[in-house]
Amino acid sequence: MSVARGGIDLSCDTAGIKSPNPFWLASAPPTNSGDQIMRAFDAGWGGAVWKTLGQDPPVVNVTSRYGAIDFGGRKLAGFNNIELITDRPLAVNLREMAEVKKRYPRHAVVASLMVPCERQAWHDIVAKVADTGCDGLELNFGCPHGMSERGMGAAVGQVPDYVKMVTEFVKEKSPVPVLVKLTPNVADVRFPARAAKAGGADGVSLINTINSLMGVDVETMVPKFAVGGKVSHGGYCGPAVKPIALNMVSQIATDPETRGLPMSGIGGISVWSDAIEFMLLGASSVQVCTAVMHHGFRIVEDLEAGLRGWMRRRGFKRLEDFRGKTAPSIVDWKHLNLHHKTIASIDQSKCIGCDVCYAACNDGAHQCIAVDSRGGNRKPRVLQDDCVGCNLCSLVCPVDGCITMKSVDTGLPPLTWDEYAKAGMTGYGEVYKRH
Image 1: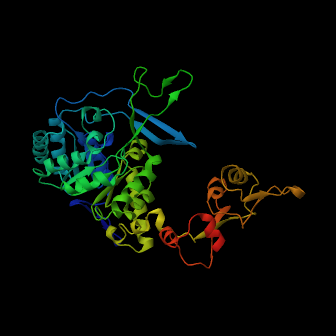
Image 2: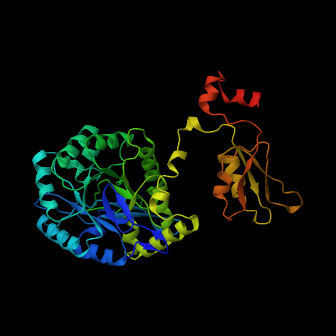
Image 3: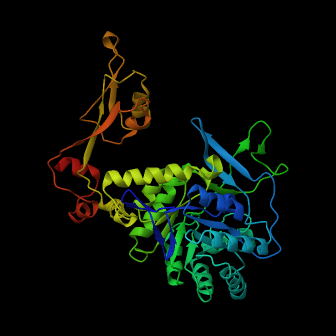
């Protein structure tokens, strides 16, 4: 497979793990066997993180294992699982991993690992996996269910001291780059990321799944997707988690203590533009799971074509030309411009008079839209002097392009909250009085 086509080079390097493109399969059911991964590589995927390996004897899974939230006609808008790490013997996985790497030497084959927090246990599995010729290791410190109750997965990832300790165990023996997979089930993802870096990690991957419960059947009063009438909390993923993942990636990209740490981005990636968002915020590669479980391996064709087309339109030749380009624009609230102003504008030619914006603004926001029904006109209008530019009306409007947000020149210089506080002003009323 050519990585440089039409002047566009998609070759990727994530913490020293090289692949012909940035699209990797995440450690999950799609990477459960060598056959699946080889079919994925044939379809065009650049790398794969093997479904997490553990000690023998293998774990025993349950049924059912998956649940989902459908929204607005979209299937699997949010996806939940209570599946554990691989339930196949370690020797079988290692044999298949070696075969995949032998047949596909240019593709990234990464081994995901999870064993108890003991130096010897980690040394043993690292030695066994290293013999496969894999390109890197991913330490699964993120799984929030099943394994965490056994002192692994998120039970490690939620304690920075454990993250650092186990990363050091692995780095003592690993001949290949080590990624630490971070759990989102923490108050601040920067702390485990810093710990991973302090432990010698070559990079991080994030996010793993989010603790969740998929609901209760109100007629039977039994949890949805139950196992014999009972259910456990599981890991939530899919398109619904993308904003959470983007935020956490940006936090690591902008933290002075982790800035520049290589990242593989994970969380809700379904289309090519999703992948670009992660890379603009600093990710070198992206990992996909739910979209493949929904649509199959061939979605990578659209991912790659979309990325190439976007790069061509923007004049980018390599991934590094735009990686992290947007990250500096992510700042603390206190650095936002208090004098920036937008107001809503309604295109009356597109308006269908549904009153959704009126109800939303008047009942749920700032009472800046009026409806004058005289003469039979039911179309809303914006009270421009009152509009606070909150965006709600444009978000709820069912007609594309009917309500847009227009920037307004206030004639005032930029003013941040820090500057505002230093000037001795207290309260928003004072801002309005002075300006």
